[in-house]
Amino acid sequence: MRRVAQLARRLAPRLAALWRALRSASGDDAYERYCSHLAARHPGEPVMTRRAFFADAQRRKWSGINRCC
Image 1 (cartoon, one colour):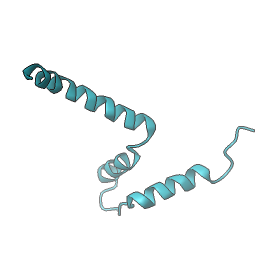
Image 2 (cartoon, rainbow, N blue to C red; image 1 turned 180 degrees about the vertical axis):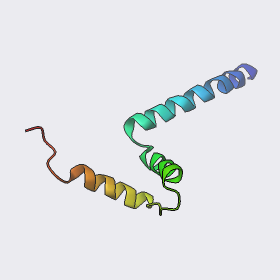
Image 3 (cartoon, rainbow, N blue to C red; image 1 turned 90 degrees about the vertical axis):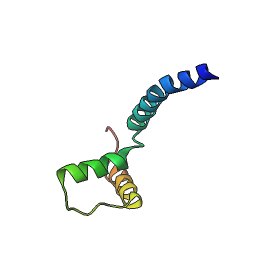
Image 4 (cartoon, rainbow, N blue to C red; image 1 turned 135 degrees about the horizontal axis):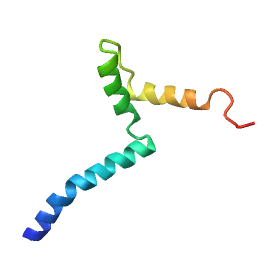
């Protein structure tokens, strides 16, 4: 049982880093990145809600011409 606990302690940080990388690559952490950017670069500005942020992202993604030719 001790070995399992030691292995879990050693793997936990690596798994957490892998999870963060997957979330970043897939864009799942976009709202968290938006909030941290806003706090660092634009303090005092109102923060969009999560729902409003994703609605805005969908509007930006699907409005306009989205094809190559």
